Amino acid sequence: MPETRNDPAKLWAEYKSGMSYKQQIGLYDTVAINRNFYIGRQWEGVEANGLPTPSIPVLKLIVRHQIAAILSDNIKMIASPFSGTVFMDQSYLKYVTNVISSKFEQLFEFNFLSTLLREYVTNAEVDGDACLYSWFDPDIETGQWARGDIVTEIVENSRVVFGNPNDRRVQKQPWIMIARRMVLEDAKREAKQYDGDEESIVEDTDETNNYHQNLASGKCTVVMKFWREYYTEKVQDKIGNTQSVRKSRIMAEEFTAGTIIRKAYDTGLKLYPITWFSIDNIPNSYHGQAVITGLIDDQIAINKMLAMVELSLTTTAFPKVIYDGTRIAKWDNRVGGAIKVIGGGDVRNAAAIINPATIDSQIYQFINFFIDKVKEMLGATSAALGEAKAYNTSALVANQRASAIPHDVTRTALYQSIEDLGRIYMDLMRVNYGERYTMMRNESTGVSAPAMFDFSVLNRLPLSIKLDVGASSYWSEITTVQTLGDLLTNGKIELVDYLDRLPEGIIPQKQELIDKINEAVKAKQDAMLNGVAGGNTKMLPSGGGNNIPIPSIRGNSELQRAVLSGAKVS
Image 1 (cartoon, rainbow, N blue to C red):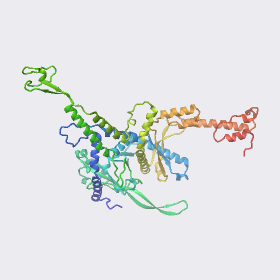
Image 2: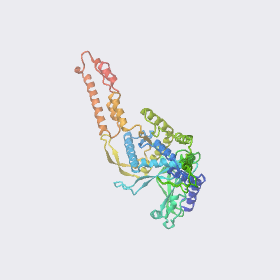
Image 3: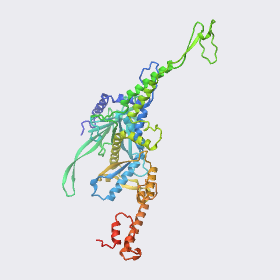
Image 4: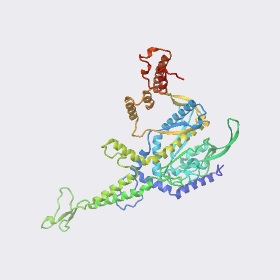
């Protein structure tokens, strides 16, 4: 039991200690600067003194390219049982895993995870870290008697505090805090709901010094603390032996600077409901390094070169007129306007035009070289961006795929983070879902229909999560169907193999069709074997049975040859 439990002063001091660590590593300033450079405010705070302030958003191009290269639209989560669950009925295991996999798909749609993951990766690229927080909202209408569903949202890295700042592994933390800015009325309503002291909730300022948050009034900081509590439980095995097993559960409480909103309670969870993702990890710190942080100096150099070129162009790149002030009182730039020249003599000597200075072409070449080199070092090559001319489609695709290889490490880390999210979803299902209807796909008809399922089975059924990442942009369903069709036409695969590998939804009642084909093949095979065994010579051509073509049915060819040749079959 933590010493800070239900003590708002100690809890707030613990929270401030975590914020102090962030200030010491310069997280708040880094995030603010990175965000400004990403959205285009690259001259903010700079005294330009009348100089031009141009900028080319190279950083945004690179970040968006990396997001597109790392993230795929078709991400599918599939549940599969641990190998140690072989003692259970396999058909029931398959049914359960199909239900969980179907629920994953529904949650992905409900939480708009495709859009959410883009923001998730963007935060990691720009801020250094990204965080997803999931919880069960009991007020969500589900269209059935069972209410509530799982919600996932983005949390800024500046509002997440780890109990051990030297370890980035979420599930190894002694405790984790998540802070959010709430409207006073909402915070007081929540405190009243959980018998908290609503009168002690007062307005305060944002501890992260967020500019936009501090502009809004009538808010306070509400912190949710999670911690892992260990306990011992006696369990009995199949032969009657009793042993003590050390287990853990996730506890939580909610507080502000001066009061407890919700006292400590057991969430029922086994996992912290948080996923954490960093692009580049820093040893001995849970905060990572943002991609933009290392590129800001490059962006500043590009902006300075552009500013100097623009200044040179505006001051010396255009022709200048010089005139004799004793002969011309005032120069007139109007189109067709007359200019009065005093005195006689040649008027050509009264005024002249100075040709503009030329800028060395090497300056432009260096700027382009600098920009291209920065993009190239981060994988945003012309081929990867689709800017290269497609003289050879295969070569272009090969170049694009080769340029995406450096992102594989980051992509793997992202998929691991999504797997962690899947485990959290299962943990929340286990605790909160109970009995409810869920959409299940009928394998024989291909039609989805609601079916009742008791999610408490997850308490006694260990499942693993396998992340099935969908096809990238190079391989679509259309390409898959075309390739399978070519293989079938050329006789490289059988019809059953073709149907089995078609994407779902292409052919209705696909499984029923596969079953009928298999039954027809089996019936034909059985009829042939029964006819030979019963002495039906009409099935044998003159000259013996050795000339009968043997069907290429897997697993039965040797048996058929033995029967047709008259050999003794043991």
